[in-house]
Image (cartoon, rainbow, N blue to C red; front, side, top):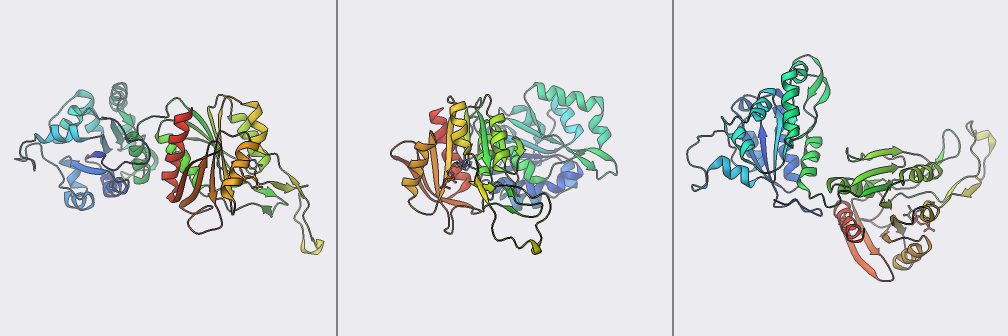
Length: 404
Ligand code: CTP
């Protein structure tokens, strides 16, 4: 079965297995997160799991009957053998939480309940999220079982460390539902960008005047973060160079946080080695204070102006050093979108530019959607209106993939 490309996960099926650990209380939130992606969720619970969370809860949030029994009589589709039908229907088998006992069964190939039968019969990728007492997790038997399963191609999301429900401290906590959903999402995508290395710059830069004050802009980093996540789930190797933002980046990317335009230039220059694509989604300051005052400027200083100097243009500086890479710029414009973007495409030597309208509702800085156009040469390649930044990110990556 192929994975999804672009942003479209609708029509994909996750068979979600829950085994009997206390962290099963997080399972309904995992189902909700999966449903929010547009995927169809079929939940399978072991008998032990039903002691921690009820099938009725899972049925309500998934919108589907929950399967708990290997021999439950006839399946809703009378011609189907239930465990095989579930195994075949899955685009991903997610097991969270996975107990030590269940992983041991998987490693041995036992199939004495519905979920272990599905795990043995499915050809879909399997993502296992272990959760248990730290000593059970670190026991040589469990470590060996995990190793065996990894060798067979089973994917794992490592447990987090911290205080465990049993009172011990250490590794064994089930990661929070959004993290599990993100990992599941990654396994549903085709890796059409595998083997491609990207540097993606995000957010604003901050140009310090004194230890208290700085000049910045309205960039939130949302467009950059959407590109980072989309590139990662499609298999690209992504390095992020980000100005100061509150936005979190996808956990699979390497992130370098910087502050000023000068620091961003240094980090991009460093990160560009061996890179195939540079996407400059950052809103880099064009001006920085001519000098930095190391002590706070006081009211009594009666400051009336801050002298500024130009920053280096990162794209124009770097392009001559890395001619073999594919360069994508962004243009934030309030007017003459197409002409201004085309001018930047040519003057900065870009391969592609994404121009978006700023200063209007539903587009530009801090918005969840964007409106604008994409240029690769003299003509307009595509236009978009109030498109979700996630969808726009996939569209941009589709065009890049066709060209690298
Ligand atoms: N850019 C850059 N270095 C700078 C300023 C901008 O590499 N010092 C990049 C941005 O990351 C973006 C593209 O250049 O990808 C266009 O940025 P934008 O701010 O729209 O244009 P400017 O070149 O700064 O021109 P202007 O502000 O006059 O529109």
